[in-house]
Image 1 (cartoon, rainbow, N blue to C red):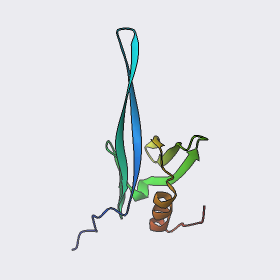
Image 2 (cartoon, rainbow, N blue to C red):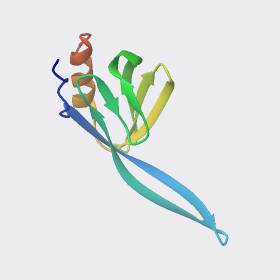
Image 3 (cartoon, helix red, strand yellow):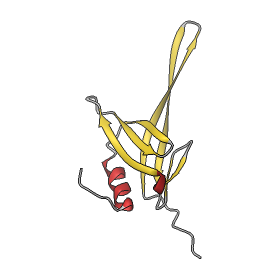
Image 4 (cartoon, rainbow, N blue to C red):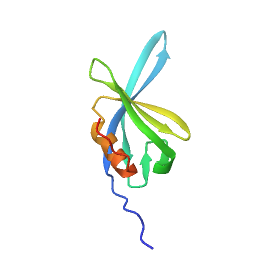
Length: 103
């Protein structure tokens, strides 16, 4: 039995902002991460979702060019702050699921 391909079909960079208060001063630290789409799953740094457990993906842009990418799963809604347009990632996901429709 052959194992499914493990190559990344599409990646979506996102950033995470962590805030802390030190000596009456608020500090922010931004870190970069990526969401990876494979033939049978979507992986984030903290979760792995089988494609059968992902209901949809969506995007809400902001006027400054950033936006929120939403991953709708059977475990809930996961939100990621993105600086790039996720259209290619979303199109690849929908093609894999077989429910492709133009955006």
